[in-house]
Length: 199
Image (spheres, rainbow, N blue to C red):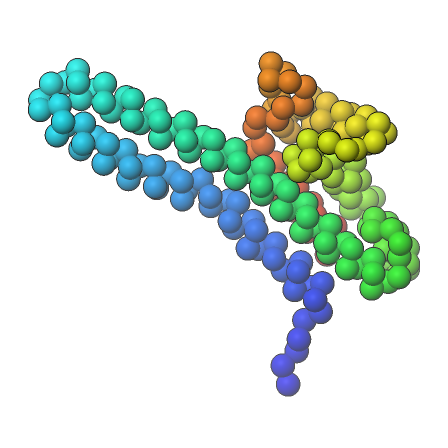
């Protein structure tokens, strides 16, 4: 007889796929970029016909465009991954809350309904995810359009804290809370915290 895992356990197992995708993304990009840079180098040599200045100028212009493009795509990828990673966590919590008949999808409420004790360490992780990452995810998804004043204030506090503690970087010159860099390590840390709380 084949044992069929509970749907929640199957969802939690998606952690391995997500963490592998996020961890290896940069190596995929680096491999592609190195290949393209070699093509640009060959092209620059062919066009320049031995003129070193022309060759260097062609290579410089085209390689700069490649680095700018991959930099933009990297930022977009990591922002998208953070949204996905928090949505992964939230969807599992929603399923768990539904299974135990809780109106609240906070881990502490789900545990209380099941008579399970949530350790202090896991409670701190769950609080970090809800009080900081939740508002960051919403900011990335909606840029706070349509949120209430209360949620805007919570978002400001969460983003200030994350920036001050070097979890994320923001560019104030482009407008308050324009987040221009969320790195791989931060997202993997969030995903690991989520996985630990869910288990």
